[in-house]
Image 1 (cartoon, rainbow, N blue to C red):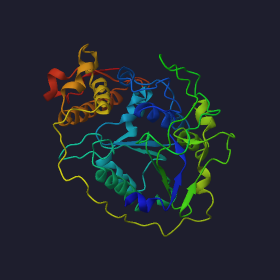
Image 2 (image 1 turned 30 degrees about the vertical axis):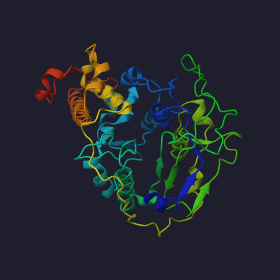
Image 3 (image 1 turned 90 degrees about the horizontal axis):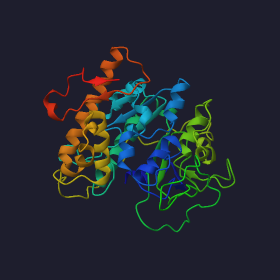
Image 4 (image 1 turned 90 degrees about the vertical axis):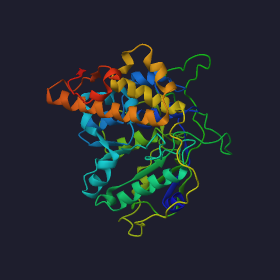
Length: 380
């Protein structure tokens, strides 16, 4: 019911950036490349991917950005975002998003991350199997209604998309002609993928008072190139245009991708008929979250990230085993404590005048869980 209401704004012919899994496609959203990743590689995800992101281009141009997270900010898979200079860009969704929106203090570019673990007290809202889609729809409803009530509503464009498809068939062929490799990196053996084709279509909805009601975007109209398509790299490409960023494109892929700034340039004044409240979705799942279940592959990857933030990655046997032994409830608690500890250490390092280009490296906390809030436990 939520999406039924929102598609009265604008829906797209939009493709995944690569015919692969979650993390490679997510990496494209803010950097226009997966840096050669064709699958979810835990060691690289934990170490952090090195490519430049749209966040850095925004920051260099003096444009504010903010990441509102729940369990853990998956955007920290980009290594550069772990730098001390970006410490103040991360905010707790629960305590900050509604407050910032109501005060008209949302940054120029905002990422809202989902809750990735499913527990009785805090159900997951990320639409990953086997999570309750009701919670995902309630999350979208909450974000929309928060933005709709904000004094910044008339300057807002909300993008809702998915990193990859949810099935094995689409009647629309996957684009394979003249799709540029982002950076000429060839994927690992045995496939040696050249990143020269897109993935399957994914749902994408955009919401703004500047969008004409009931519009469907079928393609890019051959812009900026005859073969250009809308895909995840369209987001950084469009951010560059909307904010007139002086920095070059991140890769050849976002330079090629279709941009959508035109959808908010057709009206001379914002709409006034946008609903303030969306319908409440129907509950489907009858049972409580199984918080004692084993962690999914995706959640294990988040645990790997948390282990780096917590400093536990230096224990040689720990990173490989962490996600194998914990329940969802235990994983949630570990992730949230690791994130808290990492950002507290960042606050302390900032106060001590540490070089902002440094990444705070934590010492292991496994044997000192009860005292993990002791701040002088990091080294630059």
